[in-house]
Length: 407
Image (tube, rainbow, N blue to C red):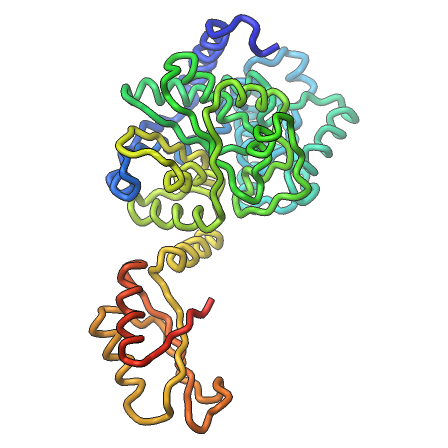
């Protein structure tokens, strides 16, 4: 079905979507990253869709889809299921185009996304723990109330809308070699890969999935759509158990590879992005940035898509703290000391000489079983990273202090 008309049909529809969106979107031109380029030995460019209107790329597909609906379909009213960003895209587009919309979201959706969706004028229904539960409820309400369903990824008009990002990347960087794209249900990477491969087949398009929700990776490996028993990832925006039928076929046709990252990779990527570029992205939006460390190439022009930035402040705080720990910037250790004068002073001098900043210190003789002869010292320090940390630990060990990491 989707192959009918070949490349010319796809490019025509992609360019049509680009025209529909030209007065809707904010400019998200590529940002060259000196920091990430040095870290990963490639020329890294960021495509900041986290700065897009509604805070994510989803407005592209939603607006394009709703614009192409018949008057009767619009009159019926819209319904969709979403983990957050599609909800805001549909709500915004519906408001701008004068259509009523109901959004079904998982109960676990961050409050910031729920409230933002309501502010765009949509009705919100919270149902289930993951996206797939919300999807089933939305489909039930669709039939019950004869509404028009707006799929978050498995729809060609949605895919063409998302694919306009691919056209922009090619317009903004002549010599692009790799494009890294987050993968959930597959609508984003399907559109981008289609646009890029039909215009410039030499460019490699690589998807990035979280280890706790790699439905597309497993599906490609098995050559059939796989439904996961559960999803477990901090990247809630891509926590999808089963990829779409259409997106699965498009990804098989257009995408070169899918790599997998862990949640701690996302935490590190978040910290680096905030620290080096002062840009905030949500966990799902960081996937392609986290994927840079898994990309086995050097000296290439690589575009990393930051797909969304809708994240609450408490999550930001948690990500920063865990990112600091993951990159060796914050380290907590314990050491048992002889209960004699001067031991704490000696530890302090070693840390000071090695320019470690003490964040917290707990000197407790009741934590050790031999409290009459030993005392337990627990210290949290700030360092410059893993290399600096190794120097500090080695110096402590050289002076007879055996440290144990505290998680």
